[in-house]
Length: 329
Image (cartoon, rainbow, N blue to C red; front, side, top):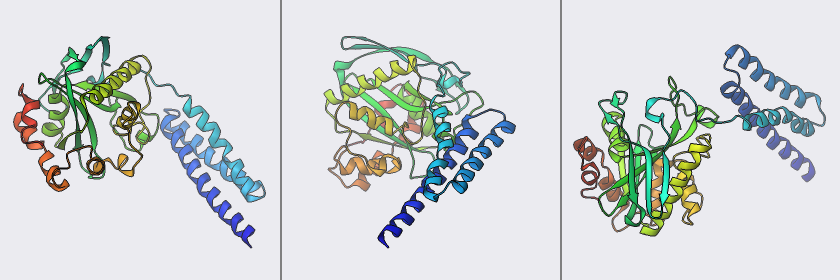
């Protein structure tokens, strides 16, 4: 009886695995396969049909389910071989990749974005070369920006220097002209990974003033040494991506999981938590871990951290970064 129950459980489990794998394979072919829908459709359908037939004709059923995975494995091998590229017809806001030169504690960054916006799609392009002294880093901040659903948000990290300078980096998708972001497509090989190295007026002002997003700013409890190590790790990745592009992935390589990866690289990553994926709750996680201010109740901290109206009032002011931090803990 126990053996029979175990067999039934194994069959059910394997059936779920096969169904999920075939569904993934179908979508991988549809999104990342031939551009022609007339060709992609029969190929995707063919994968499903072959897997179903194999599961039906190979006996016993459990063995058939295992064999049904073989076509998906072939698709997975093809899919992992699709190369990312830095040479596409990019939208202007991601057209240039940053490049960093290290000289002791001094770093020079080419292609820092500092656009002047009149609307989300109407702007003057300003790509700048900036230098900063790593010895002058005093802290690191986190922006959490909501565009709609409260379960999911966009995260931006920004470094604070003791001379009033700020440097923000946003991990995003690199979109081609005519392309828009799709949450489903983000799980496939549709977008390259892109690090926007920018002025806070660009990244934060764009979201608060022209995209209608709600933006929160939290000061991270990190030592200057930790903040410096984190920035160096980021900048090394910036150079790596300039030479060796990578794919963005909405699950494994997104704006928040990549931040955790950098934090792990410097030994402060913390354990996995569901709020790293449902990152609209990331501030709750940081509060529980004592990585943001815990001297006041979380609800009060969150209310104070909403800098949306401050960002709107600051506009294109040269003291944008100072103005959005007024009244923060």
